[in-house]
Structures are given as structure tokens and as C-alpha cells.
Image 1 (cartoon, rainbow, N blue to C red):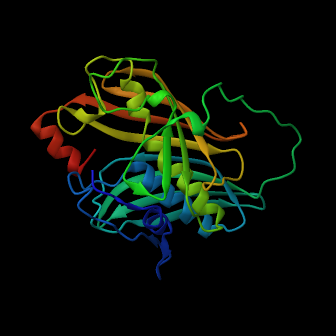
Image 2: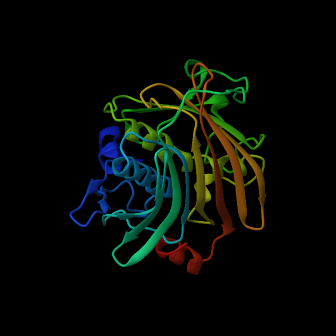
Length: 289
């Protein structure tokens, strides 16, 4: 696959700009590497909305963000994010992002931001034992400046790959990230849509990611993420993907993100579709989920 771009290009897309009307607008990057589909990833839209929310409520950390992706967005056109402020108190802000492309509503959700407070109690779910980044298999996802490594080389698009449990652990790190907490959080969120479908496919012989958008129609329908602390995307982040259900044309995954020390950075769930493709479905997938 040709290089999609550099991590700096991704950061530039996540760094949405405030327009005169108060909405936030993204820049585009539509090159040969993504024109085979030309569809914006749902997790990118989520990440851009998280950055927009941080710009709207500076000094507050996103603690919860849920988003449903109703229609596919085209990579060749900018996205416009309107933030509806539902509440803005001393500690918490609640925002409803609505993401449009032209007159088409592509995604909508709800976000909670917090000024945070000192601990009264603290605990976390421990990180499951696994290999560290140095002992994991590098994988080229066609973004320079972003290191991706998979434990036990578990991520593959090959439908003939050996089956395994519906679990995939990925280590991710970015080369350089501006000292902006919202961009670090956005980069963590942007990767949440990459691997959960592959984890759901892993136990099933003859099914693989290389069949997506050809024999299979796949898409992320909804992501819900909770941030448990500040994020450094230029340090190793471990994404623990566990698909807990697949059936009725849908998959569900319950996932966590840890740093290399084992601190829990975020938890997220992903609902996605995996369905037999027809020419009509593949056409509709390019235009509307």
C-alpha cells in the first residue's frame, strides 16, 4: 500500500479550525492511498470532535465521549463540527457534537468534560500480561512517524491465517506531537476504530480483513470512550481489544488503553457491522451507513 501520509498530516487533520460562525472545520487529505474507498474513518471524526470540544472548553479534560456514525463522509471534502452546549457549570461541561459534510449529517454524539479534582478513591483494572512493544511485531499501516506493533503478530487481513481468541493487543506511539493535551487525546481516540473488527474476525476461519469492502461490508457504527487521565501519544500506548460478541451482522468489542507502565489511560467500546456484501450494499457503504 502506498504511504497514506505522515503523522504530522494526521495531526493537522485532527487540529480542527474554528470558523467565524463558531463551528470547527477540518482540513482534508485525499491521496491515492485512500481513494479506493474515499471514506473518513469514524474514529477520526470522533477524534476531531474531541479536539473541537477541548478548544471550546479550554482547561477541561474530556472524560467521556460517545458518537454514532450515521452516514459515510468523503475524504475529499472538509467536515464541519457544530458543538451544541447542553450545560456548562463550574466543574463539568456537556456538549453535543454534530458533524456535517455539506448538508449531510454524518455523525452525532455527546461529550462530558471535567475540570477534574483531587482523588478521594482510586483503583484501576490491571493490564493483562502480554509482551511489551520491543517484543511485538512491527506493522506498517502506511503512516510514517507512527509506530504500530502487534503482540504475537495477531493482526492480519489473511482469511487463511490461524484462528485465535477474539483478542488483539496493539502498541502505538507517535514520533512527534505538539504539547497540546487535546491533540494527544485525539490521537488516542483516532486509533480506536482500527482493530476491533479484526479482533472479532480472528476466531472465524475463512474470514479476514482483506475481504472488507469486497466480499464483506464492514463499518464502525458507534464508539464510546472514557478517558481516565492525561494522555501522551508520543509514548507507547497499549490497546487491548477484546471482541465480546459477534452475530446478527454486528460485532461488539470492549477495549482498554494502557501506558507501558500499566496505568489505565482510557476504556472504550466499539459497535461495528460485518455483513455479506452485495453490489448494492457496497455502493451504499460508500455513501451512507
